[in-house]
Image (cartoon, rainbow, N blue to C red):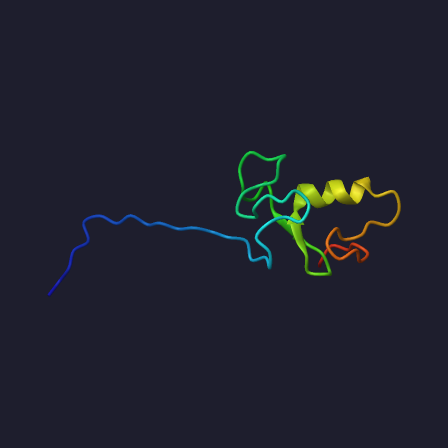
Length: 84
């Protein structure tokens, strides 16, 4: 028996592979975007620290730049270093 496919509709979804579901700084969902962005995706990526906490790129950059001394992770208070 031979089958001919007449139509095909693909459906896909994506999620970030983070341990949490929300950003620890802005509390917005990772499958959404930070308050500075309009659309989720490549313009609003997740960034991990060496402590394995993840944040929106824009949120952690604001956090790091607002610290007067050495920046610390907002979740565990370890010294903040971007994961390689």
